[in-house]
Image 1: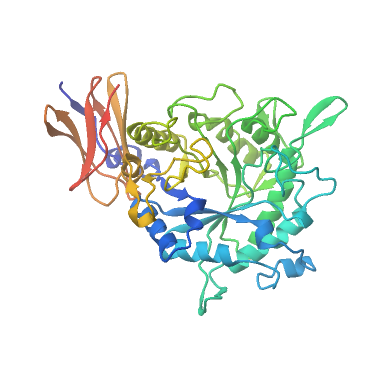
Image 2: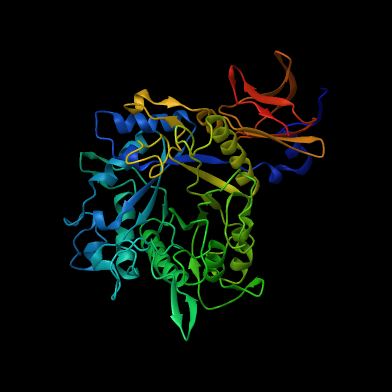
Length: 476
């Protein structure tokens, strides 16, 4: 089948539209709590190096507040001091130290308040509310955030190597999935016979306290709000639909943001668009948000800035995707290995088109199926070996390291990808048993390359850079 180049390269688009229209970049990373628990010699370090080999530049990790601070500090002043002797920093230090040594930027997310920092009247833990979710104290959160920012400022002595500082953590998320009663409760309160949203206001106060604590130490750290989960229930349920949560948080009503006397302070927003089905399938519920639905958040960001419900003011609010994935085989209910790879690189393109700047994949390596496949995640880009040194890359390893897509519409394939190195990228088409050059594209400084190619259905394409090549993509 004949193939004809329609346009070429990110550079050509930049030349026509001016430098301001250059394609934005896309950073990728991983979160994998199992990697962080590895205790054998060099195992954690080997796992993190595997992340680098997969093209990652970010490592997201959790800070369990109740584990770090099992005992209540005598005062908020002492709580803001990372050297207070009641803190248990060993695990967090280890992760930050190892991630930085592997060349990854640490991104921390705080979860799970200590019992002493929860609000009064907490019900017992249940399947829909875990310990540490009930009305966490903004006052104590602010102090703890200051301690985090000081310890991981790049200036605090490493207890293992006192002549050297612990690495800096340049970005923090204040809480994980705050639209779930499991993580932050209560999401709803019944008043005069009707359910009223309370989760967004709880989160606003908690996040603003975290923001203030971090910024009091290091104004240059990025503080991210959101990390919302993708699906919700009817009013009164255990999950608040994320679009509804964001509308309440940003004071959106009657189709616009309004001045409501309440402000959330943030540097970026985040979401977890876990999908059901392929990457371009929309959520069924209009208030749920999966991969192609990010406009249900982003459409309100600039109006909220204008209405001063987001501060500080800025032209654009960065969007981070800090968890998503698909399970694959050997989970019998997972995708095939090739499907997982195709879905992953398709998702990267769809997320990038909607403005995502950083995307975190969950997990790096498959979890052991204990007690079962259904209770664990086989979402890694590595098949699990006895140690990370013996892990086997899946096709999704290549998909995230050198993504390439060619979604077709109206007889034209939109070429997109991220090159693993500097230099031109050749897009090739398979003709019989051979590959022929269809286009040569020049990535931008951020590695993104784009182009448009006239192509019919069932044309198999790939991107190549030197001896390195992407997975193949067949047009539909």
